Amino acid sequence: MADPERDTVHRFDNRVDDYAKARPSYPAEAIAAMLRGLGHPPMLTVADVGAGTGIMSRLIADKGPLVVAVEPNEKMRAKAEPYERMIWQKGSAEATGLGDGSVNLVVCAQSFHWFDRPAALAEFKRVLRTVGRLALVWNEVDTDDPLGAVYRRVVDDAADDEAPRRRHAIGANPFEGDTQFCEVRCEVFRYEQVLTVEGLVRRAMSASYAPKDGPKHDEMISALRAAHAEHAREDGTAVLRYRTAVWMAEPRPADAIDLKLRRGE
Image 1: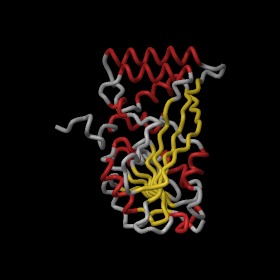
Image 2: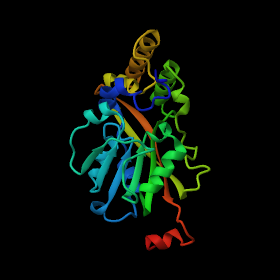
Image 3: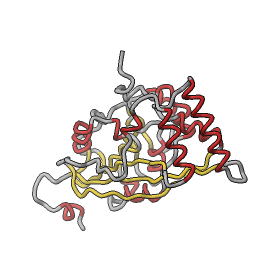
């Protein structure tokens, strides 16, 4: 039997509905940062690797590029609805099934921490065009915000496994030690998710490590409902705030030609 902590493909099998309905989106500024300088958007091809149900893919497609949503989980792909300028493909970060130099941008939204890092980076370098970009994106709950602080503590305390400890931190460079990419930088944006009490519960349940039943599940749900009631606005919704980190880098040139010259800058 597969170790559920290591089976990154299937660990979301019983979370698909909650994932599709309650996962946060991403700020428009983050999409603009990833596409900046790559060329006329309708001429671009983007690979969204670990696409889930297509949250990031749809945002990018709305800006004009053709998006290939690469997702290994069949239930995630089945949950996604057809969308203009989007193509779904079964594949993994380590074996996307894409051709050499076939995409302008590879995006991993809330997914890179599940991959085999060296193998994934090598695959991304292979499929990117010479003048291309890799963007690794994470929505991190803002624990400086009162509701965010309670949410993060409650869900982490209830966790079924060690997955929360693998969560990426904005201050940790995911490219550290890598030699295949260069010009590494990070841009951070703010995002707000407006949630009903049921939406806040579903947001928590979309996490692969949140308990589905039992005493810890019941305690988590009770604490989240109480936190929502404390921070709810007059319309009955509460705001869960995030910091969206976008780590970007370019494929390292195979020779000494300056990358900026390759971009025509």
